[in-house]
Figure 1: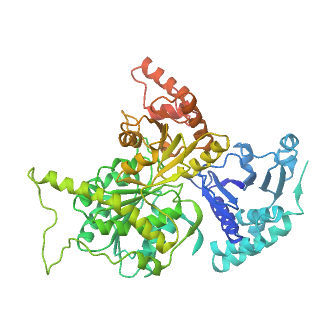
Figure 2: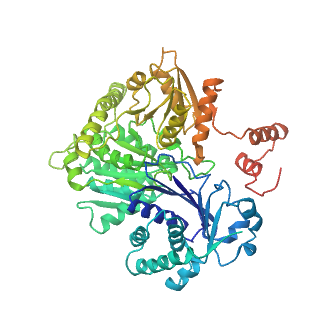
Length: 190
Length: 417
């Protein structure tokens, strides 16, 4: 089972990212469950959402405390919350940022967790370019699909078009396509 | 057709397929997505002959439906928590008058302290109102129970609450097989009321009844629930014949054969419990689980039959009878009266606290090896409680308890006392 935890802030499409992952997994014939951390969310406040993907029915309802994948949609959260809490030592981190490891202050952490793969890329800049809005979620989902192969490109497009009808969907598909190609060549490491 | 869909959206679709004629709703989290979706469906004409009323309160919502149902209209609303308490007087009236209204309860805690998260305190507060109460394990079952609820309510002329865990189910985005209109029409006949306000054939509904007949009227309400004990499994079977899947019924069993310890719960925590049962069985613990789907009527006989060979039943319940302990466990004890079975009460998941598989497994092991205190509170922070009790003992003006507790756990930066 893939267990994904998504960190961001209210207004950044964190819950939508979890839904897109689940919808894409469904399209690929898998079983998925997406749910938000249930709070009285406000714009700008830290928000968490979760997605489980499996090939058999998912019965658990507990929040994901030991993810094997993390999305960090807002890198300013790195030093506010323990976003890495419970992450698998072989985990994958998708980071929305234009900055390098040193700038993010993650070098020590990466030395201690050598098997964790971190992909840092400007997902919100890609959205800004195509949509005129810096919403990172679609780029993060496409980036995750690209580096892990856990979701097909077609399924990600299907999920986007289901969530955003019409022109907005078409523009988001462009964001996803660019993120899909961009990420695999921008792995950062120790 | 299978869809990846939010629980609230799925339930709204299911209610729409049941061809409601009057819906009166007042939004309140976590039920809001259901009623706003239904409101939109009525507005765009997706639901045929239906009126959606925006009302001023939950009390207004159910009062409107009492009138609508008495006029012979298929009637629906949804609420939760403080909203259910606010409509309490009408809740009892709807049942007392025998009006087959269907209401979704997106289960949520009751304040104070104000809390918007899930537990079962709200519907439990209305457990003796005369409404049938069915609990869904997942969103597929929530959809299926709504369709069954209309048939059950109208057959017995008795209102039904379909209880689904707030947020945990209402806001979960998962796979649901939504039926077709043809399937629902096959299953759910048009509403044929046993009593109706009709100017052509006038009757009065809502007579004052004195001591000479009140007990008899109440007995007949109880009798209706006894009939429901037969109707619920039958309707669940009919549902399975048409929709090709099993949903609802009085209770569901999971690995209960030869199980020495049984876990028993209502609602969505049963998913986590089944995972815990699988892990425990792998380790050699003879454990099983009972999912109580019908809480009202309480299926005492079926439960006694299912649990009669177990040494221990651990009831995990998301409610608290303050001053007594477990609500569900008290009823389980009554159902198992005379048997040597030990019944443990585990109060868990209050106000949205997550119930983890690890905590369920630890609790089962602790119960079997050492026994549990009665009632047992899962994951209770004794340190914070003891500090607050000390403060209360030391000073008369110890201040408001919720605020003190928030300071204890570091979530509030107010003045330290």
